[in-house]
Length: 291
Image (cartoon, rainbow, N blue to C red; front, side, top):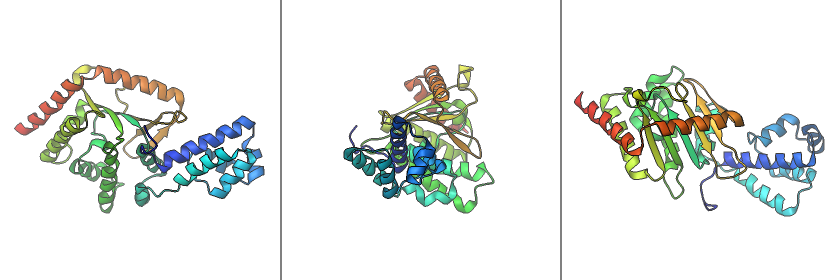
């Protein structure tokens, strides 16, 4: 992929932080030593190295001086730092979400591929507006009615990553319950299933949806909804996001992610194949027509 492939300020800040940490560790500097030389204390440095806090040009210069970086590396890092200052669309909705979820939006916007297991609800990247609205209105007392509109805008904005010259690659395993759980009015549910079929027809080269029916029995991800994000840069490892009804957490523990990725692959293989999954969704769609 070329340099014009989508990225995000969140992913740029993460990669910049990792590169700075590599330079610090190469020199054997402790966070305390860096703090003494630059005035960037341990907590701040940790947040910068994890991509959770942005750097000013002046502070990057201070770190580059401390690490004695050559001019070409300084220029490369400054170019990356400048991209972290881009104002991204999700910043307009910051008041609605936790820092962790805002970070997920930024990571998702800059990801190359997402793997998602959704046992009982259609994933946000594939939801219609009516389905998403019904989830929000019925879902939790923490969502104020006035916030449903902006939250809906957020969900639909995320779906733009499935279009364009460098679309997000998406592999989804849907539990049968996600297709049968009535969310909103019957017509809205039927439109949601029709939307899944349309996505497969129009975006089947980069979106795969497989169904794991009730009859498949136990499988490695039973009871554990999850999302795994992969990135273009070899420097960036995969991340996992797990969500409950009221909160979500980003996980970067390598062993957990390795095991979860293997479990997803196994579940993906046990699910109905691409053609049978499409036929299953179509059959549920037509069943709903009878009611």
